[in-house]
Figure 1 (cartoon, rainbow, N blue to C red):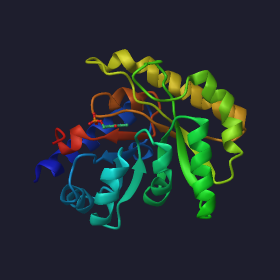
Figure 2 (tube, rainbow, N blue to C red):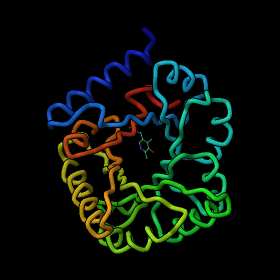
Figure 3 (cartoon, rainbow, N blue to C red):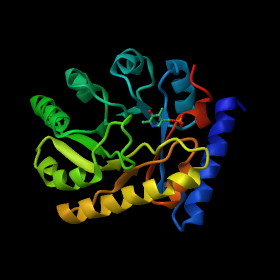
Figure 4 (cartoon, rainbow, N blue to C red):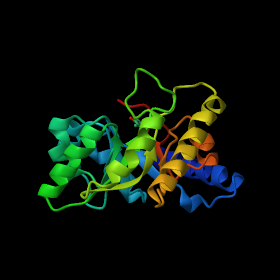
Length: 227
Ligand SMILES: *Cc1c(COP(=O)(O)O)cnc(C)c1O
């Protein structure tokens, strides 16, 4: 077995155990393979192993790499998107996860409209209020959902967060719990479900799944350290 195949098996086991431990089905947690800094060959191997969802955080890298990857791969943008890159993002990605401002949402809506597309998005929430991170303040996100939902070329699917770095993942459990609670309040406010909770990475995915994550974004635990 290749290192990637072994890592994938270990990861699937981690996901399944965490799901079962919290009374959920393993297949209710989607694995998004974070392929930033890894070459198209690695992604092709991942596709052969059955992975089909990948995440990139830089348009420049994605623009060069995506055309070299198997057509079966689907792509989510998971970084901070600058407004001058929105036009390309709308053509390259099946979902834009890191929508962190109203201005960005409006810009995505405008470009999607020009292409007669509807773009699925997640709102990135800065739950812990870290100054180093992008994302909505939780209260501001709640107040914004109805306005965002009115943008006709966007489809709001849920929320995402990047938890603060912690050596002990238990320390960030409250962050994941608060994102889920915020998701529930946003869905109430909208009167519509917001099914996607994108939370959990290599180091903290078990805790995130126990708190309701439906999509984990995993790079290092799958591909090893980034070159
Ligand atoms: C890089 C990155 C990840 C993956 O982190 P790992 O710790 O390598 O699993 C997840 N989410 C986002 C937004 C990232 O930028």
